[in-house]
Length: 270
Image 1 (cartoon, rainbow, N blue to C red):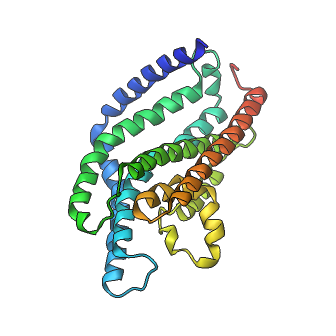
Image 2: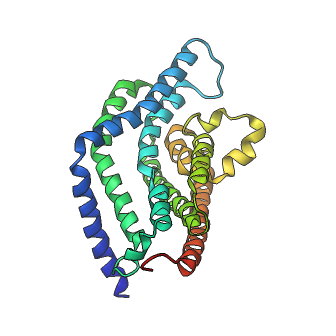
Image 3: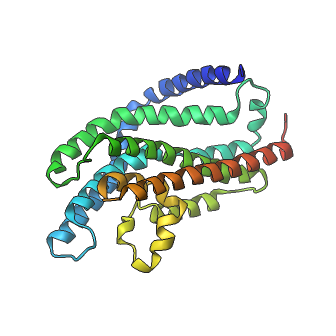
C-alpha cells in the first residue's frame, strides 16, 4: 500500500520538473498552441461559409460552430506524443537506465503528459475565451451543470484512452525495429474516425453502426457531442459506458504487451 503514495509523490515532483522545463521555451509553446488551434478555426469558417451559401447538411450552424470551437479544446486536452519517444527509448536501449531507478519510465511519461495538460490550460483558456466571445450567438449552451460534468469526465476518459493506445503501439518496439509506420497510420485513421477533420455527424448513414461504436469516436467526437449535439440521457450513458469499456480494453492490452516486452527486453546495460 505504501507504493501508491510514494508513486504519487514521485509523479508530483516529475510533473513539476517537466513544467519547469516547458517554461524555458514558453514562447515556442504559445506559438505551438496557436498553430494547433488554427486548424479547427479554419474548418469552422469553411463550414459556416458553405452553410451561408446554401449547402444542405444534416447539421445546422449552431452545431457546426459549437463543434469546432470545442474541438480545439478537446483535441489539445486529449493529445499525446508518447509513441515516438517511448519507442525510441526502447529501440536505443535507453530503457535500461530506467530499470534501475526507483520510478518507472512510464511514470515519467505520465508526468510529462500531465505537465503538457497543465501548460495547455494556461494557453487554451484565453484563446477559447476569445473564440467563445466571437461566436457565442451561434453556439449551444448546456442546459444544466450535468452536461458540463459529463463533458469533463468524458475528456478525462478520452485522454486516458489516447494515452493507453500510444503505450500499446510504442510497446511493439520491443519486437519491431521501427513502429513509425504504425504510428503514422494510426494518426491518419484517428484523424478521420475521431471527427478531428470532419464531424462524424456528416458521415453517410450506412456507416452509422460502425462510426458510432468504433473507439476513435470516443477520443474526440463524443466529448464534443455531449455539448454540441442533442444526445439523449440513454445515449450519454451508453457513450460513457463505451468510453470506460475501451479504456479498460486498451489498458489491459497495453499492460500485457508492455509486461511481455519488459520480460523479453535486452540491451546494453539491461
